[in-house]
Length: 496
Image (cartoon, rainbow, N blue to C red):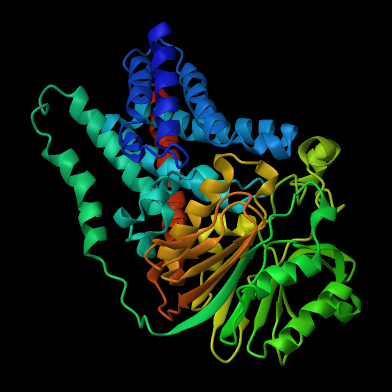
């Protein structure tokens, strides 16, 4: 009992220490091995209660969740507890399905099945109303993008497969006396993706650039009165030149709600338009809460010199804070699960699709905060730069804003686009299409930076097909479950 508890806790800690924030990423390749030992203990002896595997795995994944996403607590105590439990349950579900199928289909097919079950759960966690893909295993390499350049073909789910396969191969190697000396296979599985990554090159015209001013106003997320449009404009003008073509400002930086049909009536919008008159080349991308047809949106507003404002409505809303998932179940708990964002506790309307902002020179793909954790949301969208606007102040100075910034490096690789990022406070900066951070700011720094941003028109395989791995693996996971069910039923049929 104590040994099993120790192994479960050890797996949870190995997963935690590998994650961005602590960042000892090689630990991820052995993190599942202690938990595999727990599963083996119950799998080898039929008389043992196999549902205890679920309990021990839940302990592992609860430790993993609470130590890596503890910062959600600062925004919502109830929401954080719900997130810890739901995420841990989903991960444990993949593990108990693996255990059950392994007992029916055998060891080899069982470990094979784990990969498909896990990827299916990660894919589900991208697409339901409680979506929280923060701990998708492939995100672990965000701090070391040099070894996952192939994400332009697979997205982060490819990284999840790599993690699982290496853990399984290493465990089988360690557990088998016959192949103890054959370390070559685990080494090959570990090294081939790294070698491929190092051989991949990002080729595009480095001379094709635009000048962008990124503003980090450092506004207190819990005190709307701390924002002043005149201070914001003065900060912006400290870095704007006659060549500046884009001014990037954070999520919901304009306080209060804006009627999309009558923006000009607001004094802060009028001051931004006058800023454009002083700098004729400049386009402004800024965050605000907007209203259209009685719906409230978390929006990005694109103000072009010669066109009417264009709006992008956030398509991935934070469960609890911005939307109430499955309201028939959770509506009664909305005050417990939510933080109040501009008076719209859980009542933002979800945008239908990503709106690409286009002008004669640049096609800007905007992502608002939580959207930037979802690689698949960009599928099929053609652009030559990604602009992320966010407000990471809700989480205080924790690992949360650091992880969020690192994940943007993976979006750059998947799309082979430069990423410009404006955070209210947190980390603002520019990321190269290969995931390298070119320049970044610090926490609680009031600053504007002027950067030359490379443009790239390349359309990647992942941009065309999105999370095709998740779709394929989900289909195969269903087949494995059906196969296991049928085989188990056949075994129960008495023979004459």
